[in-house]
Amino acid sequence: MSASEIMPSQGTSTFELFALRFQFTAQLAVHFPQGQTANLFRGQFGKILYRRDPAAYARFFAPVGEAGPSGLHDPPRPFVLRVRHLDGAVLDRFHVGLNLFETNRPEIGAIRDTMAELGRESLRADLVDLEGQEILHLPLAAARPVERVRVQFLSPTELKNSDRPEFGPLFSRIRDRISTLSALYGSGPLEIDFQAMGERAAAIRMTHCDVLHVDAERISRNKRHPLGGFIGVAEYEGDLTGFIPYLEIAVYTGVGRQTVWGKGEISVEVF
Image (cartoon, rainbow, N blue to C red; front, side, top):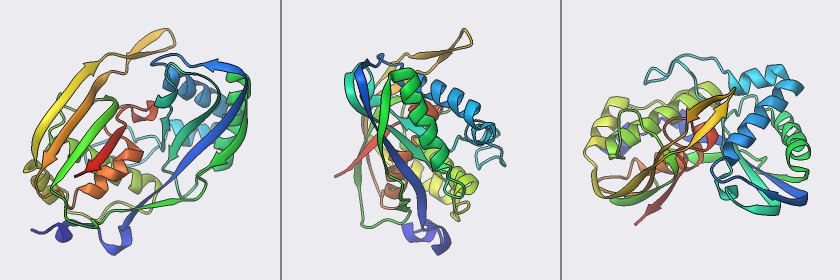
């Protein structure tokens, strides 16, 4: 079976999102705690959004929807934070990234106002600019043949039933997440042959793997919750042509558990 035979139909040829980037200027330099920045922003963002707009909070933090292709009974949140670059930094000018997958009812105004209030209350910082308010259309079809790729796991990544990023399980988690996000918040589920893609992914070879497990946690209501996983790099070889668009979309969506906190952030290099 060729790559083109398992690609999405014309009706779902792209994955859509907003890559929002909030620019702040602080009165005094802000010290961001190492390993806790995402938890700080996620907690404060949720608390302030709930206070300002409970209905918007429910859509962002308690979404409802049918289970996805892997039985996702707890639907993924419609956003992920991108604040890894702030860990341990001391800055008076900085940006906060938030990738928003809700393109039907994006609520960008509510997000902007909540982030502005978060900056004033928690960081003594003013929101001076918001970039990324135009929707991104990321193609799901391959542009050229690819036989080798390197994936770097930038933040702790946790894959279900897998301690190493073998390509089959990694791609399955990416594919299912993208399809579920599109079904819940975008233009609809992907019209692809999940079984065929899974079989082809299982044939991809992992030629290099250098990952290590890191421990991290968050504290909520005096309870500790693990946020650990593996970081590092893996390289793959094989007929990767049809898989590259999904890997590139996963740069924005993340992969694995607890992505809303910034876990599962990856980069992709084709070579």
